[in-house]
Image (cartoon, rainbow, N blue to C red; front, side, top):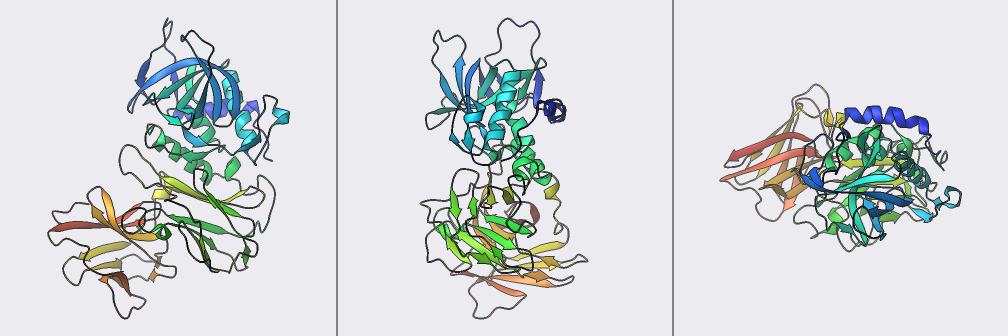
Length: 441
């Protein structure tokens, strides 16, 4: 299990997060605290309603029992902290020695309990919608008062690497901030993002990359198998995935069967839908889509794909949309996109840079208003050298080559009167866009 966080981390964490606008000074000499205001600590975002009260029991790293002030009763409400997801407990207890759970679960619980204790067990809850729930639990953002300042407890847990990012489309005020904190923690390999925090091995030295294709070609849910997680073995030795698992930001997981291996330089796909398992293609057999789409608006929704080894170590992760340093993609400025919307429809990518560009992990997307109607994924080994042009033909073609690909569409996708096509990576970073007529990038 990971080591519990000592109280010595409280000062540095609060100093860091105050710079990230997660704290706000409490109003001086205020007889009655405000019942509402801007959701975020820096005074921005949508409006929220506030509740004040006392915590009686911390169940785990994202759940606790709360007694609201002023309701004339001692009735407790179970609270689910919005925007975060801690590892799961198997045994819940007030006594930390009796608690049991997955690797990192107990550390997250201890840290949340520590923050609440430092706030003298009194917290402020916030929500855009009072009715927000996850099952029987009320969904709320939680703030603790430390040093006279209300501080976002969820943001601390995210920044310190105790929890996964779990964006919510209804309580979205904190989505973008929490995503940025999660990606920062992942880049620094903090706590649950440390690939050897629980136990060293197996095959600890094998580099692994994970992608998620979260936006399938056509309407969401029409082809679940066009939504997938891809695990790539970047080493020169086989990777044994027996007992490993992949999951999304929620609780959906797929466990690899004994004998599942990935050859050097090869990938294995876990498709969301149903099918006959093959060596490089496995099927999750979900009833619906696993991954949330990027909203491209103030809600800032997204998701993540995570690969765990049998010891509970997170060996590779993929969080989208990218916010922060990962937005500096090497293909930006190096790949130029041109679209021919009239028959025969085609999209041409030209490498105007000085280095070869590997297009694995990149997609072409056709605009349909604020969403995308069609998505084309580039396969592994699709490389454009400097000065080369690669053309993707929309219609089915009898023959293809390294620089002549086919989208395999039966009809037409592009409006002659106006449309737009994006080249993006799977982290949703825009590489280039081409628009014509009434279309807009």
